[in-house]
Length: 406
Figure 1: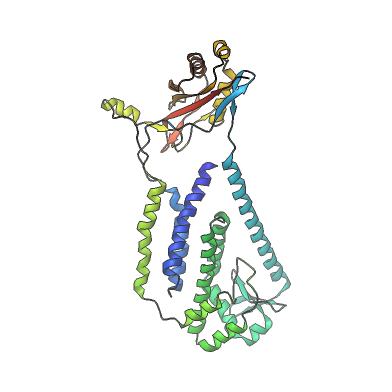
Figure 2: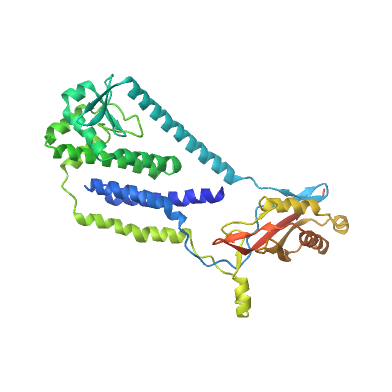
């Protein structure tokens, strides 16, 4: 679960950087189709980019203390699990995904009802659904939805909708809707979706004018039709969205072809973020005495840095804490002396799942130290080893215990 949330966060970061670059640099250019292709291809690349792991130097030190303690329970230390923030975040994220899935399904159902209730005809090789009410025209997939009056009296509107179908804008919308559903929490994703819709309108407007329709008359038609809102996230239409921008783009001179090369600036920018998300892990161990010792130590990975963390008895590290708590006996001498507090143990989880090199990092008292070492060393259950680059590795683990008296 945490690995999935980390992937969503990283990919969301890459998407944010990419969309911010587009909005700041390429938004006002006239490369409608080119920008559209790059916007989609870049989105797909940012989705898969976090799956590429950059090899980094492994850490040679033990993990920092986990947010896990052992507290008193009938005279024996017991595990107290931390609040599962990652579970709360995952539930909130899942709620957003589900709500968008429901919204998308409702939109698709409404369009389906319009198809069922409307008159279906073929015109110039296109499937057309004639709307009964005075609704704005739009396209969904390869189907054009248009009112009978617009179909008969405003050929520019029908021509505009055919441009959406010819350019396969529906593929863009379906793909970007999936991105919106998964990365709904990133505001730049929603802004980029609006920009993609504008690119579709720019491209459709350009296609209509290139067919010989008078640009001035077409712009006046846009103004007259500037009513109502686009209601379907998966549809393209003859809408008034950003009308001022659309008319301004029709009048704008073509951008210099050299501006396309601006996208090359994204390569080092994204490379920096990839490096930042896969930064080298610092080694804090002293220099090895000899080559054999160096090779042995270099195989160790900190618990919080290993790709696949070790598990104990089918559960996480807290499962090991529960096992320890069920076997610890509060030493009588420590209880009489009123000794209590927090201690730290360190051990290494070997590639075969056994525990080795058990030692006390922070002492509490000789009696409590000895009891903690006795219990850990007596454990006859093996861990499922940690994995790094697909191989079982030695994992350093720091285990905190808190002894409390009633």
